[in-house]
Length: 554
RNA sequence: UGGGGUGUAGCCAAGCGGUAAGGCAACGGGUUUUGAUCCCGUGAUGCGCAGGUUCAAAUCCUGCCACCCCAGCCA
Image (cartoon, rainbow, N blue to C red; front, side, top):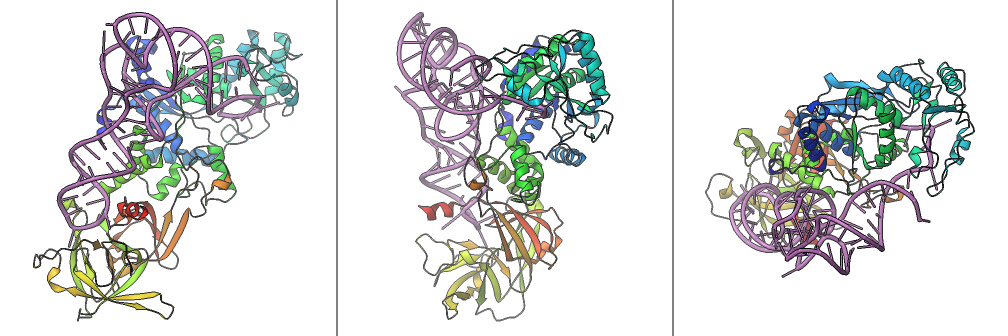
């Protein structure tokens, strides 16, 4: 894919797996899992985890489960399951043989919980949530044991059965693991492992009114599926002792190992499902798939390719260090893919009219334009040239700085694939606004004819005024101004600009929805669809690198 | 101020006792009918800080500092 993958250095997780394999652990098998909760859409952070988990499985000839962690029906929806599958499909990973749901194991979980009770390792607590909260202690003070902590096994069994059968209201009882209320690790202070929730589950309907908590369900799911390496993010480090406690107390089919790595953060964006959900619900964006969102569906709509996201993930390291990746790294991956694979077209986003005074004919003449400068196999096309054309407004300056290689009064510039033109006159309205530029063209300078030795510094793009297609173009900037956004106040008010006066060369007619192009000298764009008023609608995926913009700044 | 983690260039990251890979960014230069692409070149006497062990330390030891995570019947 790139030079990076050739000499890919191994991350610490691969080292651990190598060592495990060397020692013959887990029958020399490797099994991982990607366990999203279906309560939102996947984002770029999930992509890293998907690439890691599915990548490791592939590399070690193992298996990777896609497991929906659906233990909290209050927050989950079938729609999210569908969306998540779609995103993983798009990213290019397969899970047909390995698709599971935590809810598949509800009965197993229940039986294991009964075992915990039978062994004196769990009890039903009848304190309410405030009481439980108030007796948990603090970061520096131990908690207080519940008065219900020493109920008999018999009583606990009866109570837990009655919890299952629906005899209690939400919150009346919980099942707690009996560990240590004085543990310095708060997760070990008799954590709740079951709560009562009279909520219909998207898959199990009303079969259950008690649902297992994450730590319990996750450990058991891993053990049941034979996960060898359970990879999660750093915030679960404190949960590992509890994970291992369950593994120690119960006789389970396998002994998975939890390994934590740091989350992926990207500057100027958010990789928190909860915060992204807020942007969706308060209308800051148009939806989970808004092209400005760091969700996989958003990036897909924006025009990013799955391949470039995989490449990006391969360039970002897997470590335990807190990180904040610069957007430039992602953009580099996107540009690299798009440059190789996108056919070129010409489009003018903000048109400025050019009249070629010495072009006598009212007819159009056709010039050849290659579809890719380095890939002849992509072919070429004809572009209409004639007396009236449009160029980019920013390609003309009446009073330019030095080193401005574009059109200026009295100056010459090449129209790409066509002729060299000279600016003769600037036509303005009474208010002084530039209306059009009158030029002359040099007939000897037609591209490809070799009739003239004339060289000019600048080459600009253009579109015929006679043959073109009107377009509406969405230009995006980052959703947040601040490199590490905290609140709504950091939102970039200019994250979306709509240009409804754009025009594209006529050959764009052939485009199908989802096709990507490079509009020369401008950027990469994806064709969405035609708007109701007949405009071809494009999203700008990303600009070209622009060293002129840098020169201007200095 | 309890517990768990992490500190190598602007951002990532390799390194695992033998004298600091690589990528992105930045900055020079070359090619170019895209100010794109591509190609070439430039960065740590230094690995959070201070000591120590050793012929030899980013790697081992001690102390300190900074930052992140944890007190949901969320995951």
